[in-house]
Amino acid sequence: MKVLVTGAAGRIGRAVYVRLAREHEVTGLDRTPASTVDLAGDLGDPFLLRRAVRDVDAVVHTAALHAPHVGLNTDAEFERVNVHSTTLLAQIAANAGVRRFVFTSTTALYGAASRQATRAVWVDESLAPQPTTIYHRSKIAAEHALAGLAREGLCVTALRMSRCFPEPAPLMAAYRLHRGVDARDVADAHALALRRDTPGLQRYIVSGAPPFEEDDVEELLRDAPAVLRRRAPALVADFAARGWPLPRSIDRVYAPFAAMQSLGWQPRYGYSEVLQMLDADSSEVLPPKTAAPALR
Image (cartoon, rainbow, N blue to C red; front, side, top):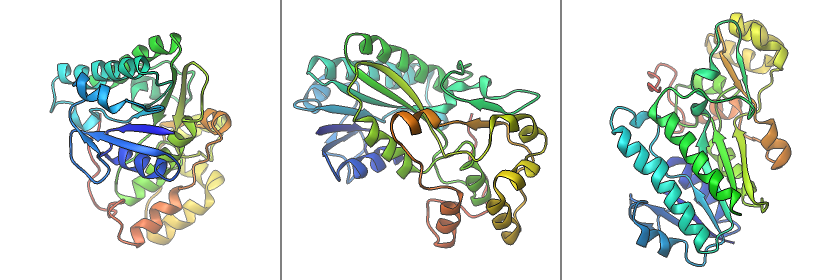
């Protein structure tokens, strides 16, 4: 297929571009020049978008403002980039005959719904979002806009991906069990989503495969080390060997099982990959004592 990837200079956009280029003809679009960018310009430019979707079979839309941009960009700019530009791109693509649209969404949009006082929250696609920031609200609004176009015949897949950026190694490794994912696994999910050809909107959570069960949720919040010793003994041993403390409490588990079943997706890069990258001095993981980024 001929595939347009927006946000191709970004972390996920680059990973998706590289993954899709193995089997498709890919064009990358971003306002920032990069080796994976073939068309440079703003998503709000309808002339650029009409050129970008010409003769394209599918669009993968990763471009967006993200959580770290909250407070640095106005709410109006979030609306322009994340909602209006997404809607404009999808409309222009549909008018040009594009039938498949993969939208990179986020598990962050669950907001307050992913936190409870008495137990960890088992987060799947049935959980209703409770947004708390403009970032959350803008991603939900974009999904709603795409749902309208999906009712008119566009095949839309929204991939709600979890945390996927360099963090201190102990945090990043533990997160791979319940609220983190590798960029390469995200790219694989996008590649599989392109195979969907049924009109309508389908949402999937994309996160590392958790070793936990739903019955663990109360104990995860109260005594995560006890659950980890039972469900993830290899991680417990690796943390002990490195002198790292286990997380005392786990407040949520993102459950990607619908994507695994419906898309045939299988996350390949778990916590052990984080340790290997740390030992290899990869810039994909931060040293243990590095301060974690502040996200809302």
